[in-house]
Length: 117
Image 1 (cartoon, rainbow, N blue to C red):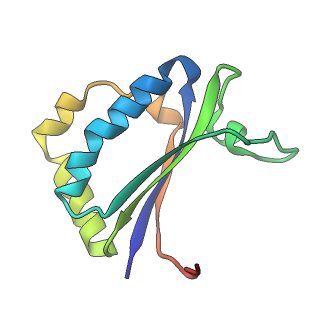
Image 2: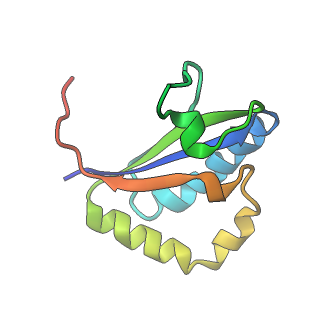
């Protein structure tokens, strides 16, 4: 069954292109390990809530934008194996620094429970 890795981060507005470049550079590493699709979304309509929101969750400052991204995998086993392999891959060091504060990024793995068109 399809499986998804989801990510939320706050990216400095000045680093939008650097973020996009970083994401594009990472895609071949995911693809060669079985990823089917990668989607990167720049926040446009991300309201501030009264209790919680994307800004609070990432501790985004006024000059940062929340991003929402996901990677689609054929199944969880492929996803788990890919992440394990990438953590041991020396090519990961060539990716350079992330254009955002990775300490404020959060992620998780998700199994779909409804998929309608």
